[in-house]
Picture 1 (cartoon, protein in one colour):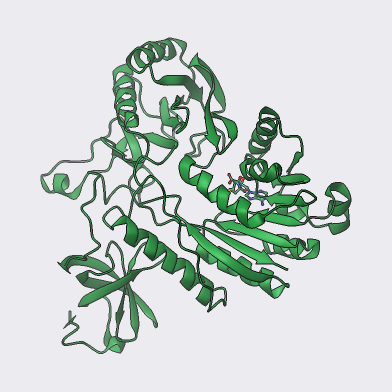
Picture 2 (tube, helix red, strand yellow):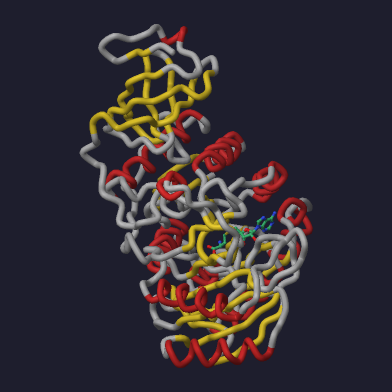
Length: 481
Ligand SMILES: C[S@@+](CC[C@H](N)C(=O)[O-])C[C@H]1O[C@@H](n2cnc3c(N)ncnc32)[C@H](O)[C@@H]1O
């Protein structure tokens, strides 16, 4: 083991696994690791923050970079904060809670600029000021909690000889563990009542005498708890998801929850037999109220059921869509294609300005939601097309004859970005303007590069923080032909 410090450095070329180094962290990489430069070697340190001086142990060494484990913080960072949540660290929810919110947004903005520069080949792009979330805690409108037979046991407890005994636990998955949950006592993402709801559901499940569903054997009952809270109407949906229906238990659940929580406007007991760890209700039994809650985005109202896709930060979604609408600047004679439209929320947001909007989406339930949302908001110039965009736009002549030629395209792909075939189809369709929304700076950079090589020019780019305390960032980019 050799030790190097900034005052007495080892040559970077000799750095190897298990070396102990002292480093100054100067930024966060995309994904949240701290980044330090040691001579010409870039070193990534998980859980280290910009501005900290840290002692690390090298865990991996490659030609141009290394990874290291944080051993100690020698000097704290001026932008470091005391995390508010007791589960900070092992919980996979809020990785950046110990960094000031201003610094979080600055770091994410820097990551967007770097991705565009290095991966997209846009060295001179000047970003619009990032839009921080109006709420930094309790900003989510939906959370899914998992039941597990195993809980994450903190190191302090292991040191005291406490073992990971199987039982019934309810919470969020511990970082890096697919089968262990943090037996949640508090969470700062969904409004505070959610903590009481989680505790009450856990007590109910424990008292039921039934066990947690085991995906390997298929035995056991309890699987997930889905809670939704509409920011504007204040309505609450609680959905207890089990492997099978038990009428007597469901009635007991209803009595306990409704009596104790008059705020609940939708109470469901659902079942799924799927082995996948996804809180999707295959069959729903409505116990109380109606099966959906009502949320608004701007002037539009949406019915959101347990399974519906809906942006999870309602207040910031309103601001994100306002940017999209302003930049798209759709004229009354123009046709808009909204690619990857989900439940049609962007389509409906721009519909009042457009001649016509066509939304494209591959999930049938989302398309059904989109159609229903259009009807309920009395919007009749939107159509929603179900199918995979990889082949949906292949035949330019057929697309144009079915939907007319497209003037403005709004694109909001999943994290991996667009399939090459979709990019090529967009280039053939030649929209005049494109508003590209993305939740991943790296796939965005790649897609923008392809679009610009195909004849577009990159205009404004604006980061929008939809998920404070996480490493995620949303970006809106404007392209013109
Ligand atoms: C990031 S979400 C955007 C949703 C919507 N624009 C919104 O703001 O709520 C991406 C959407 O793309 C859909 N999707 C993913 N891959 C697709 C594909 N190959 N073809 C069509 N839709 C796809 C997903 O089902 C999801 O609804």
